[in-house]
Image 1 (tube, rainbow, N blue to C red):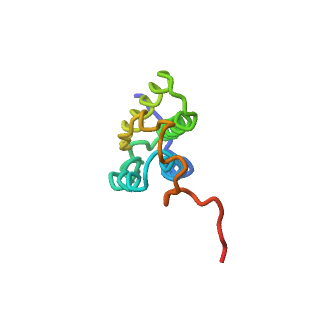
Image 2: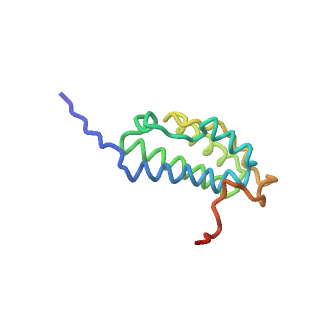
Image 3: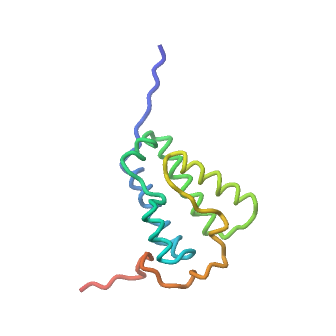
Length: 133
């Protein structure tokens, strides 16, 4: 008889996943997509998680894979690198996210430097500062 011990993902890992998804919506998406498109992503539940998703990545290893994939996609997009190697990495990590039940239908080409949204204000962007009243 073989016993395998699996450690459940931690609350901190689940929070980190939510933080990275929020970063995508508030920092990455506004640079490449209009508010209407981002609203559609939200309606389509792009990168949304649910209790069911946390069952998919319920172990430490799986949660770490999701975190690593999100961080890799973010790094590739932010770097602006257009080489084929980075495109392959982008799609590989997008597949990992999809494998864990996270809907991510976006393509590498949608994150081009030529985006018209780069300097637009967005309701999804984080405020540069806060005004206390």
